[in-house]
Image (cartoon, rainbow, N blue to C red; front, top):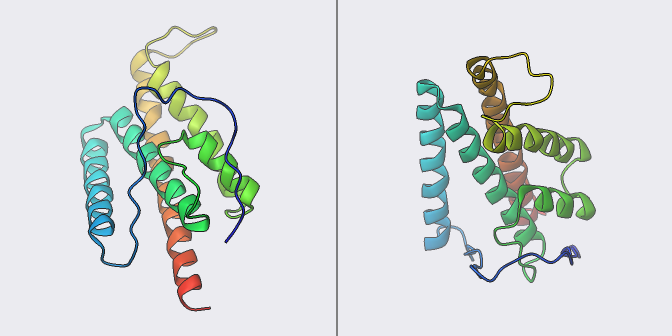
Amino acid sequence: MINIEKSTKARDTSSTNKTRPVADESGSAVGIARYDQIKGGIDQYKKAMKEGFYIEAIALMESAISDRLESTLNYLNPNSDYSYETIGRLANALLKANYYSEDTLNEIKIWTKTRNEAIHQMVKLLPDQSKSFQDRYDDLKHCAEEGYSLFRKVDSEKKRMIRKSSNP
């Protein structure tokens, strides 16, 4: 077990005090439900990309990446609770644990900045903005594709970790 310290930075949990459901064995109801959720998210991502709904696709990939990072942290330290943390906090915790490569975690942090701009600043007029809304929106396709690529990367790494610990 790896010792992973959770950030002591306070956050408001008054509205929700959720704990992540954890699969206790292969084929468990929680594992099957999580697989169905991820599969549904990937299927919806593909539909959103086909229709040009890039903000939806980006939001789905952020959720999928966060799920895999939470899962990794809870696998590495079952006594920790990284339920529903922000993607940045999850990446920082894994960086401290020295689990994923620093490059992968930095890619996630960079991607998160683009994701935040897409989700929170899409209609805002930015200083020195020369692109129209539609040009800016069309640029989001790359962010959504990069999010999918990062999801595949962290999902593969999580699966490798489980195989490795099952077959020492």
